[in-house]
Image 1: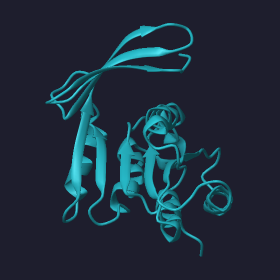
Image 2: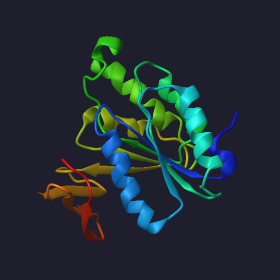
Image 3: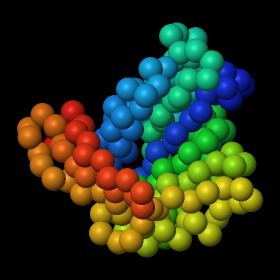
Length: 193
């Protein structure tokens, strides 16, 4: 089967009950300025076959080796993210949140959390997980880290590796402040909402 790793792409995979598309777009917007060879894949339905075809088309198109790919990883059943991760082989796993979306399928919030944790479990050796410290249904996923995997926590309020605060919605952009232990950046994302 065709996989991203055959093209030596670095892959950032994003999951969560909400905010996936916006986060993929925000990451893409930031990284496109640094790495022009950045692509993104959105999925409307968690379908590993269409995902594989989409990634093949993307890589057979304009992206070169050593590209950076940002992929949205939805789920509506156990094993879905595992199947998608076999295709994209994530270097970085971003888990935004766990909410009651698909509660009718999963039955309880912890089952949704376990389905989302499939992304963290699928990380390549030496990969990085980026976890929402504000969401206890996500923060625990650090316990799934394997050897040489790094965890980066983000938060809007709690002490974390990366903290963000939205300063202003302009109607055409979101202006925010991003802080780490060593740096503070003012960023503007061309996003509505």
